[in-house]
Image (cartoon, rainbow, N blue to C red; front, side, top):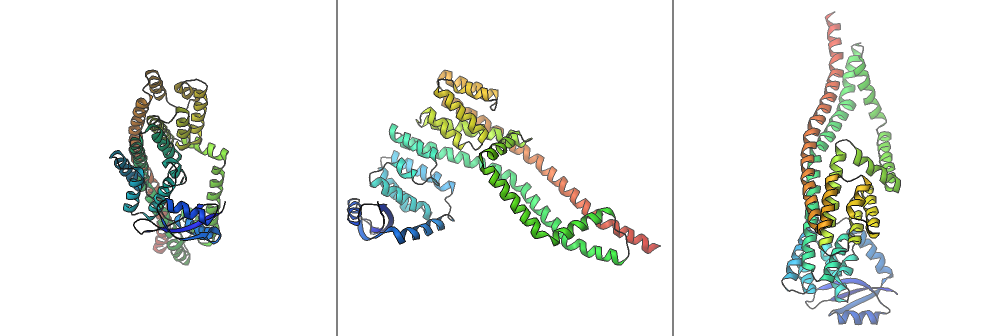
Amino acid sequence: MPTYLYRVRDTAGKLVKGHMDAVSEAELAGKLQKMGYVVTKITEGHVGIKMEGLAELADRFKRIRTEDKIMFNIQLANMIDSGIPLLSSLKTLKDQIENNKLKEILGDVYRSIDGGGSFSEAIAKHPNIFSKLFVSMVKAGEVSGSLPTVLNRGAVFAEHQADIRQRINGALFYPLILIITAIGVTTFIVTFVMPNFIRIFKGAGVALPLPTMILYGIGLGVKKYWWIILLGIIFIGFGIKIYIGTERGRLQFDRLKLNFPIIGSLARKLYISRFARTLATMIASGVPILQSLNLAGEVVGNEVIARVIKSTRDGVEEGEAIAESLKISGEFPADMIQMVAVGEETGNLEGLLNKISDFYDMAVDYSIRKLTALLEPVFLLIIGCIVAFIMASMLLPIFDMMKALQH
């Protein structure tokens, strides 16, 4: 079935562009007229598809912020909860939103629903914007008739995850600045300042001590072979990225993150919190438990934990309890497993999972503050040692030159 590009006007006279599969131009024109549009142009999509591909390539450089998606969820939930039909709500939000990329996507969602599709099917066409988890929640909300509640839960969940990411990025920002500054200053001194001193020392016939020779050799190597060093760093970085992209590499890297001193404990708490919050949100939204476990495994962000969740899902399908399957893996702490077991026994699994997530969120916050307090003096100590070594390399020949002048 061929694809056609179309240009139409809506009831307000606004120009709308898009594409749709149809048997013929006449059939497409009939569909668009039934949707209330006035057709201005229809073109078969050979050249158009190429132009559309260029447009999609340009759209990759645009960005839809998490805040935009959260506000969309909240506003849509409030409008539907107030009795405004879904299509009218989407049209109003589309006209109000300032982000052009999100506006365009909402326009496509609106047209898909207006053409007879469901909301979940319409947003599933845009996986880069609407995750599988969100699509499943919307689908469950449509079936149960609780779409506003589900949208609000999705907004709360997204806001919570964004807050966690912001706290972690904030904790790592200061150490990262220290590292970049130290590397930049050290490189400048070693490659530009140190050679000038060496020429003075050699001209005065002063024998260079070992620290000065080491630093001078490093400076010469960096200045002469900087491009090889840069290519080596890029090559190693790409090699690591390609290896991590493999199933084995991803598993080993994620296991290393869990077992790494200090950071591993923080990462494990973060994954447990994300798993518990995701599973609780999905259960509360009416998504079946097996599908909820599948989605929780996909979004947890660690292959080791994801495999445990997949094994748990298989066990639940065979009639085992969630807590028992998690316990066998050895990857989850005993207190978390005990709370899950109590939730299953009392029928309040959603509530206990939320409590688990709240507890581990507090633990993550405490660990972040502790890690920040630890990293700052460690990096300052490392920078101090580097500065001391550079100063010693420059001062020792000066002392020797002063002794030679005295004699």
